Image (cartoon, rainbow over all chains, first blue to last red; front, side, top):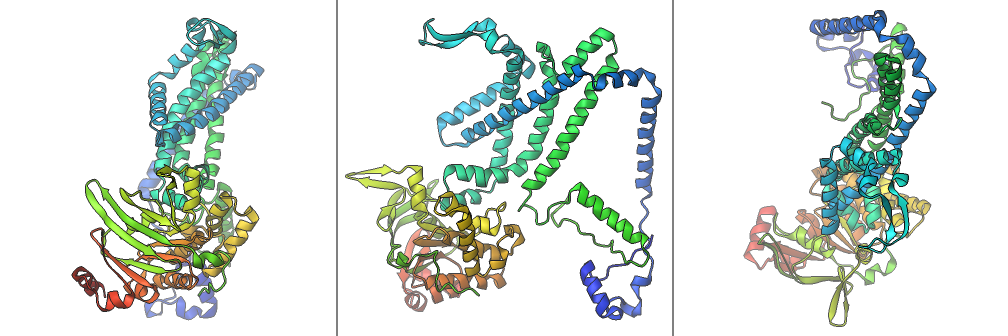
Length: 349
Length: 268
């Protein structure tokens, strides 16, 4: 591998200087032309050894995936796009979207209430969070589903009497889907409220003062100034929660709601192909999580505006940059500058 | 540098408004008195510099003018209006938040740590309040921002984020942001304390230009040389007490209070 040493620090300055007075800039003490020398990179033997070990483990596992026919890949393929599975997948997505949106919306309101000066809002919010963090999600879903046992009819009427103007059977009102959405979104709201509150607390106090001094109305302060800055610390946790929720929807299989995991269970109870059908569910969960993780990257990048001097490159930009570098290396005449590449200036661990 | 000879941001009658009256203001934090019976009248268009050692209460006093800090006793008015309350007959009614915000916009603040909104560009920082308060349309807000940026010598930085600017540039954007609401009174809370010595000059130049325009300026600063040059009157505070008020010539030339002499002896 041949590289040129970059004596001035930046590629642009180097190139400019080289074209003007190459002899002066490129010669070190004693008149050595460092540009003519070949760079030998440090060899990381231990790194290579661990790399090889990891590669071996991965290959060994991949080999068992192919050769162990108990995985039942033919059955996996047969069911992966089965209409029943896709319907279950649709329901899983719907539950995640609805419970996620409602949960975070309610969570934002709870967080703001928790931070407000009103002692009533504050304690109401605290109690909500306390209660819904205390009750296990599984139990909560079952209670919502069995609410008809406690309150057979729900309606509007004269308080403290049995007189109703309008009423409806609880079982009609709270379907399996409604019970699942109620359970998941209330549970989600309690957790996201704390995440959002944490994000808001991380915004510098001076920002609040500046916003107040400018006479910005409360909703502008919250929506335009505080939340966009809080988003940076909220987002990694929020995506954790959404991914958790996506997989957490499988819990509602206890009330026989036909989401992805429940459908897979129903099918393997019928045909006894447990592992292949669990794999169908697993691979779909992995695919959905992957999509969410990619989304996370771009959403976080968007909210990094102003927080970092230079935004981190998108994977596409990195790939292009890497290809351009390799291309330049192939072309012997083209000088390459790998000493200092265009990296984000922000602090990295 | 910038010339602020004609600015639409500071209206013409600002010269006749911007009277600040501070009467008997006291304030304690957890038993420690930071302001003790402070009385001060700042005339419209006057430039007042508040000097004093760290922890003397000068920043607290400044912040009470804008009600970023509440007072325990006494009151502060701008043009005869109390910022947090309204008098009707024999009673003082606490104002609704909307009304407080409206009165607050009459008093601009420039903070020591700039407090620009980091997720908004320089132009967006300036246009945010006038647009949010529906004083101008979005497009006009941008125009207003560009005009003000030109006046503080940063016409080419409209789309830069605060973190991409130097401290001096950030503070100049912060001044433009405060001017965007056409305040009658502008408060500066140690505007140059967070800056490198070589960046202090560019911010002081902008304030100097503002001083000529007739907006009431109240400046808490450690730049005694600047205070002497630009201020009409100097206020010296120590331990929450106003110890001395006078023209720069009086305060710097022949300070009456021994504590003032001691302080000026150290910093001059």
